[in-house]
Length: 429
Image (cartoon, rainbow, N blue to C red; front, side, top):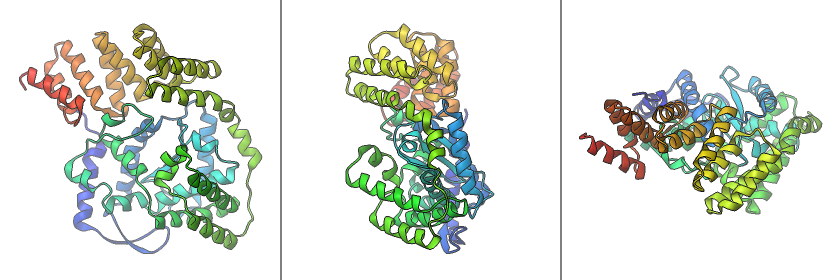
């Protein structure tokens, strides 16, 4: 059986930290601090192993905007080059999610949602967001949170958690390294870490030629949004990056120290965001369709997703959702057609292969189910995929393999785990 490398290495690193923890110098601030006893290579390895699964869970790469991805990466790399750890293998990715959010994993693995990009006014504000995340990575803030107990129980008890993500119906069924990455990006940073990331992120901005006043403007907007109860931001960026008036005042002081020179690049930003802004209504319809589905208003959901597809006919997420709606409406053939379209447009996305694989299982297309479910597990481990895979290979007479898949599914603490245990019992295991 395959086991994600993060599952093998992370508990050992955490337990080693408990025994051998000591002081080291923060590479950004130069101050002495307690942190995990891991080498830079180990820190980078953890981020690398968790990056792609975490991207997938959060919505997947914004594959329709490769030029936008390249632009965001260019801005991010300009900040990484002037950071205090310029040799880390930084990566910057735009996620296909309307939730306004940005996050960093250990080792310089950084992402920003399209939902946050459309809220920004210029490239300097983008640099403020990315510079802040670069500091979180460079200063090993995620590693420090692990040290302080955010994930210690995972290391001791083993990893097999569901993650409560509001935009993912498979969230409670997610297992392995993807669950760990999501724990890291959802956990709230301390006020000290936020102030530290603001300060040094603004310094990186200035070094890279951006006006640090953009960071002040951005934090002012965030405070107003938090006071106004903006739900999208509350469930996204503000969950892990709480804004405060203290941060506004601190940023204002830092900007004064750095001087208000540098560029905002507003026109260039608008040029790069033109496509995303053009498609904003389609993605809004998609988000409303998802909400309608959650409320079991299928006809309303169908009308909304049809509108989204009419506006943007090459978005895999739209076809996947329409497939879900049609499946709920007992139209399996048309649902399969939609899932085929989603997979054709974005074959790397675990959810599309999982949806199609489970429908193949329902239709007893065992070989096709096996192929799709294995493909989904290559990206993200879910208990439901292991259960379905067990069914698919058992139907093909491969009971020994089926037991192994059921055993993995049985680690789930909910209904899927119970079904897997029942199947194992029926097989005499």
